[in-house]
Length: 255
Image 1 (cartoon, rainbow, N blue to C red):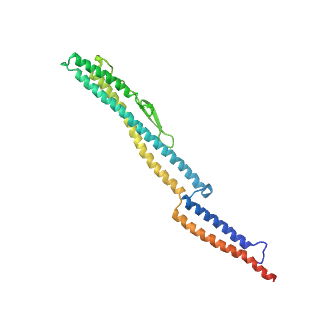
Image 2: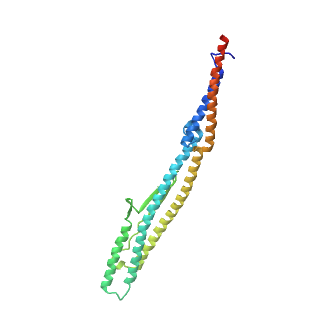
C-alpha cells in the first residue's frame, strides 16, 4: 500500500516494540531486585497472598520472641523457687535436729534463730523480681500470630511460722509440699511453652518458604525471559526502522 499519512506497518511494529520494551524493563527490575513482585501490577493476586503470608511471618516471629521471653521468666522464677525449696529443706534439717534431747538450751535457741531467719528469707523469695515484675501472680503471653495466649500463675507459698513452737518437721513438710506443687505447675507451663517455640519455629519456616515461592523471582527462568525480551526489543527496533523507511519509496513515484 503506497500511503504515507498513516503508516500502518510502522504503527504495528511500534506497538510490538513498546510491549517488548515493557517486558524487558520488567525482567530487568525483577533480576535487579530478586523479587517476582515489585509492584501490585506484577501479580495482583500473588501480591495479596504474599502480603497475608508476610503478615503471618511477622506475627509468628514476634510470638516466638514472646515465648522465649516467657521461657526466660520461668527459668528465673524456678530459680527463686528452687532457693525456697533449699531453704525449706534446711528448715526440715533444723526441725529434726531440734528433736535431739541431748542439745542444750543454747543449742536450741540457735536453731530457732536460724529457723526464724530462714522463714524470712523463704518469704523474700516470692517477692523477687524479673525485669521489675514480681514472680508471683498471673502472667500471660501472646503465643501465636492469631493472638492465642498462654497463662502462668505463680502463687506465693506461706513460709513456716517462727518461734520455738513452730520448729517442727510437719511445718517444714507443708512448705516443701506446697512448693513442689507450685514448681510442678510452673514446669508444666514451661514444658508447653518449649513445645510452642518448636512448633511456631517450624511454622515460621514454612510460612517464609511459602511467601518466598510467591514473591521471589526464579533467577534462571527470569534470565531466559530477559534474553528473549532483549532480542525482541532489538528486532522490533530494527523492524521499526524498516517500516519507517518503507514510506520513502513513495518518493520514487514523484520523480
